[in-house]
Length: 79
Image 1: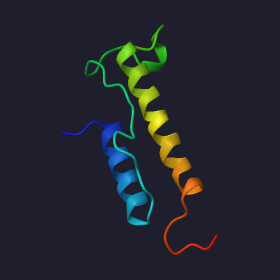
Image 2 (image 1 turned 90 degrees about the vertical axis):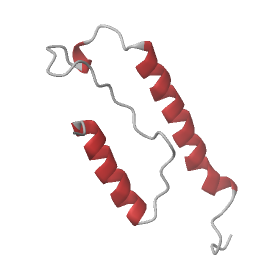
Image 3 (image 1 turned 180 degrees about the vertical axis):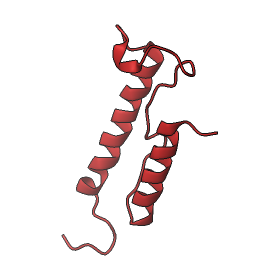
């Protein structure tokens, strides 16, 4: 069974892909803790290092991808 964040991101990314958006690899960061645990991510005192590292890499990939069209127009576009 999929987790809720995974399912939502899968549906959203497929919908965006269907209308022409490019989604970078590993474009989703979420934390899945112990199932049915009493601690939510927002209640943690510190962000786990593995989550912080993944979110940082995710951000860098998305910024890089977002800047590509500025550097090189898509084929068919006029300058």
